[in-house]
Image (cartoon, rainbow, N blue to C red):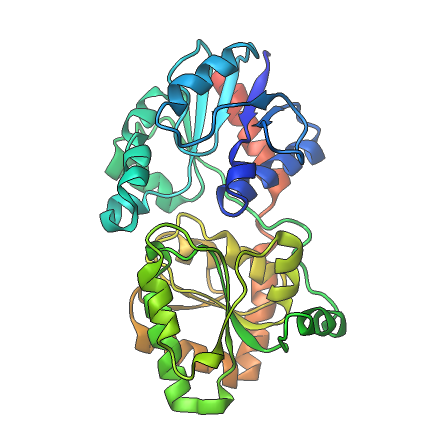
Length: 361
């Protein structure tokens, strides 16, 4: 079997989201002893492997990066950010994380929309299309016209570092940030798809009902595209001191933030998988999330869900988690069991079998 190359540029350019997916897959390949060449961004000092000069999402990226791959003489290239190279005589596998931008067209900037709309061509060109959930697989067929015979589902997972920690150690770490355990936590990019407007409204309802008994809301994430409305909504929460902005958090910081939280809150309009809920559950933290996209599929019965966009239902779910300790304990335990069903080693093995399937054909 010829050389298999994973395009890992987004591990540098997008440390969250797709970047975490790439690093998780690499760790799984290594743990399973599977030989995959990692093609990294030229500026990325954290990964070993041949360097690629073309920046992802450049208008000419799919054409130019194909020329870079040609010099590596691969038998197969795996593109984990939706769009494969258009040039080059090698087999192609792509990963599609979600098609939220087709269900909610207003959530992308025009430039981002132009890039991701290449997915229609991508699913035709690719030899196999990996979807990170059954929901995404169904959307690929319904919305993007993918041939269902090409589509394979491979779930994501939490890295092994996401686990329960000693609360005394967690408390000491949090105090460096001016935090005490017991806050509500949001983790993710600040962008329309995450529906932080509903989070702001739901949290305000919680504050109006419970006053000082309601814990702070911690926002751990950087500003993405079209962030302005989300930030404005959260800045309008009163009292404003209840909302804490941390900016993006590295994985080694996230494990402490999860462990210190009373609950993780994810109000997204749509998730193709929802990696942060699995990470939080792996830490034993209760999860409150919307029923957007694949979230019901991923959390099962191990979280409290509310209908997309319903701030009142969100406030009710938060109150149940905060003031019913038995419920919070049960969900924390159920979450750990649920998270253990997802594994990067298993994801890597399934992905490698897809490579073998393509190359055998």
